Length: 248
Image: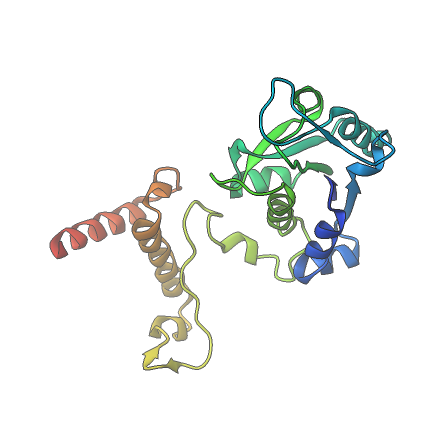
């Protein structure tokens, strides 16, 4: 899978993603990353890529020409138009489901804005997806781009050493992940649940499922509306609800 990032700060992208799991995936060639400096495509002799907004207002706006020329250079050898993701707080909130969808693409381009944004005309021409990582404003799109690339990369076959690990993490089935434990058996007076040391795989799986349901119910109950639940899950949640009511 090939990631391209259109940015004013390519070193930020390179340094941030050439570490840990994404760094190993890049070194092995499972994924590729090309952080392209939009400033390299400006026609301004001072390498400016921004100007004052028409109509007045605070701040500066990134000009369309350098952004479009950067995009055109990246895509000139591609067989089909790739998806171009613009990081903006006005976009749809990024989720695990979106990460799964994007992980199936061959090429992804991330467009990082700065200042007061980017000229609307070039956004209309090249952007296919407007995405956000939350309802807050950052100084630029680089951090959201790295968050999304990290999330998408781990779903690409071969990126994770343990291929099953991505299947059982938070949000993968619409639920939060169950609690995890490792050695020692006892820490600060708290012991690992006995079921996890029992070797009884069916009991362990059921315990984990119920803990996922319980955590989701207590911490992110809105997720249960979209989660895939069977009869046992619903019975457990009903019992959990009545137990909570008794304790109120």
